[in-house]
Image (cartoon, rainbow, N blue to C red; front, side):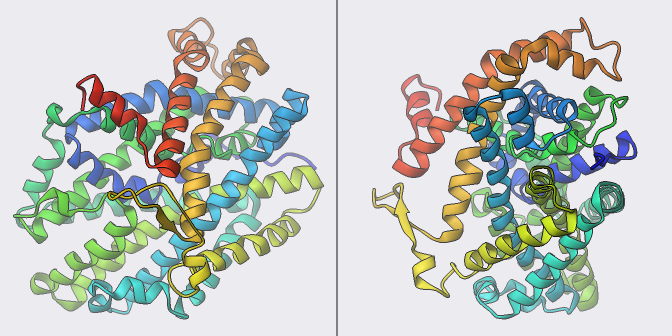
Amino acid sequence: MKREQFSSSLGFILAAAGSAVGIGNLVAFPVMASKNGGAAFLIIYAFFVFFICLPVMLAEMSLGRHTRQNPLGAYTEIGQNRAWRTVGWLSVITPFMIGVFYLVITVWIAGYLGKAIMGQLDQLADPDGFGLFINSDELFIYMALVVGLTFLILQGGVKKGIEKATTVLMPTLFVMLIALVIYVLTLDNAMLGVKFFLVPDFSKITGQVLNGALAQAFFSLSLAMGILITYGSYIQKNNNIVSAGKMVAALSLLVACCSGLLILPAAFSFNPDIEITELSESSIGMIFMFLPKIFLALQADIGYFGASFIASFFFLLVFFAAMTSLVSIIEVPVASIMDGKGLSRRKALYSLGAAMVVLAVISALSFGRVDMLSGITSYGADATGQPIVKSFFDLIYDMFYETILPLNGLLLCLFVIYRWKKQNLDAEMSQGNASFAGSFLQKYVNFSLGTFIPVILAIIFINTVSTIYFGYNMLTVFFEQIGFN
């Protein structure tokens, strides 16, 4: 079959930005920044985005466009051996499993959006409300709606589905985000939050913070998920990959900054004496437990309907971000089945979707409804040294999102530089960009991908395994020993 393509470079940029602008980028990032130096953390994060993550992004996009393949096809075509084909399979299985837990979180957001529209702010702000909702039968109604909408977008293909949806959703998301920021900045005590977010405090920068900033930058740009290889395979040959990559990175950074100007001022307007340690770095904790309290408190100033409207506006914003990311994640295994088995998009979606929905239902039942799924295993260690009980949902998250992603990134760098070769990477990035050859960026991309970026990703991978599964954070111990803690 003829390879589908984005109709323009803008279509690709918006689709790639949609995959990058997700839940963590919108909600967890501002709290992480405020707890770890404010503007100082922002500066470090921006440095990592452009000097470490951008080369990896360009490598993924170039590999996809050159091979016109999904990750499995790209690794198989160039690798020409079983080992690299196995890496290709890992790059397809990873987004499939990430899609499972991301689908569950998107369903939660859809449910809260529905409740906000119905004006049920008291239920959303109830400390027990989240636990009751995720264990209710109502959850599966929202799951059916999210699955239906996701399949509707993906069934339309690249131009009529993914590109059409993101060209509507992403500009709308940006407008909504800016509108909410403007509104929040008018609230009493909002400037306290702005000050907390934007005033740099370099004394809070530690080795652990540096590791967290790099991990946040790497994950927030959807690197090593196979998304950018797959989307890259849909880019036209005359499009400028380098410019598109820079634009995606810049948009992701812009959203992170705007989210900081939304979440922190809202928190301080709710309670000007709030301690930043009271805020959760978890996206789930912020979205479903803390922010609903703010929306309920707004009733005193703007009334029931006004508060319900603002809450609905916010959850619609987060839902758009979640949907664009979910669509891009699922497209990777869909493209792999279509390319590998020669199936139509519809048949690939149905066969893949059935398996994903079953796993998503199992994950949704692992929060107390089914004891066996809620405590399926235990590993790592808590503050007392005891193993941490993990649910089926936790297991998927820890294994595929936290652990395998940096490993995939490491293998990608090694593959591009030492198997595909630098000259082929340069030739692909030079198409549509005559000034790239011989530029500083060309030299930097080649050098960084072949030297320190793989080393950094290897360290992150080893430290993640050590921390999550054995309860021993090697980097924290190392930085403490050298006095940088």
